[in-house]
Length: 380
Image 1 (cartoon, one colour):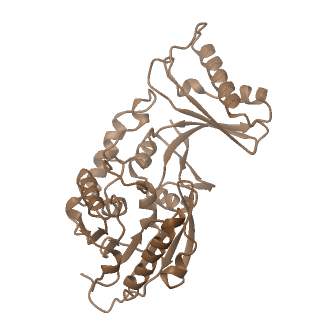
Image 2: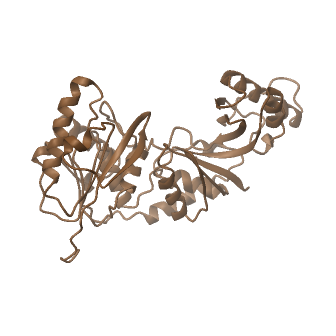
Image 3: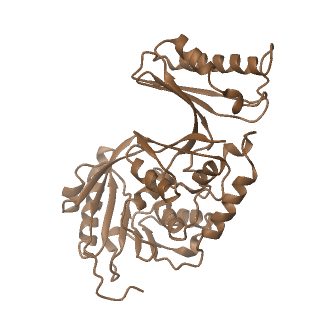
């Protein structure tokens, strides 16, 4: 079966996911927070297993204009639900409506559900209620500017849930967001990598996954594994191929530090769970004490943002210490994520470039300081 598919991701990361899909040989079309593409069962498995920056992969069942509840009902009912849902399918429907005539989400949800039930009852010749005792097929109806899009989620719990994070601090960065930050840098696995405010270790662990070319979805399960129409052996084939492509022996130079020893213990626990403890050097260290004689490296930091006023002075002190510690590293590129717009002033220099990103609901900027690489010596 061929599907119209869509990958969703945090706003501002569309280009990262697009690049990932192109690397998998997939043609794309981008919209706000969404990247559309086409494919078959293998494409569904491949994108769920390999995409580092996306949230989830959905099948687009249909799209049409809906200005009235009647139009919504008829439009939903006309779609080929029986291609996807078996008679006993459990199909919860989530409703979303933005800038549209139909704005009551509970109504949109209820009418969509009713239309699908009517279609399925007609196809399967049922006069009684549908059992909904079988596998779950999570559906969503989303109406944006009067265009209704109906999707079936193939992922299940979001792709950021890689399965390795057992311990987390108070404001952990999502795994897919951490991976995207790294993919926005000029880092290559043969370069030194430093995460100086590592917290529960997410950025360093994602760097190690990228460095070893380990597919992020290798250890987890997906909703589509229970879909009746999905060719089950395909997923195992994709996972086997991913295992073959991983380079577990590659030497990586990844350093992760934090001022808080408890966080370092937590980060080590997570790295161990990911099977990557040997690939990362963890160290309890204050940013102001960081120094290195290595060249041509990359620093990616997600320091505290100082959202609460009494934290702000402390956080800006940390930014100033970062500026001083990183200043001598002229061949290094530094990428620092924060929602504090006073960052550059505290850090002590203007960024080469800023990029607006949403860390969950928090508007943040990725402040980028590009190094001047020094390639005079032999790169080992």
